[in-house]
Image (cartoon, rainbow, N blue to C red):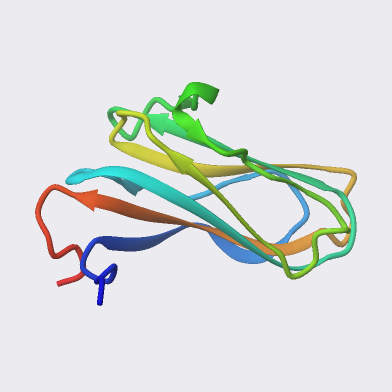
Amino acid sequence: MRDLYHDLKPEVSLHFAAHTSTDTGDAVDLQGYEGALIIVPTGTITDGTHTISLLESDDNSSYSAVSSDDILGEAPEIDSNDDDTVFSFGYIGTKRYLKVKVTVANANSGGIYGALVIKGFPRHAPANS
């Protein structure tokens, strides 16, 4: 059997909550890893448009938007049609730190979701020791 447990390390960036306004998640340090998968599970999305994006940094101080060349798949734009959905996209850039950001427009009640950064391709396994 193949073992993913020792090759992956999940961390929360955007905390699970009812999001009604633009928010930037916590930094995730990718030191020791060569790639990342971002998972965005949703609950009930009542209203608004919730656009997910990814920020990167070398120093955990100055952040900029990740180039589309460094994203595999697409960061989602979530709306009321996306209840109980799981979105995913990948990061193949070279920066040490990532943050998941959501830009919210036209939301009163908003939507429930969060974002995990799954760190992968560890330089030294096991990742979950």
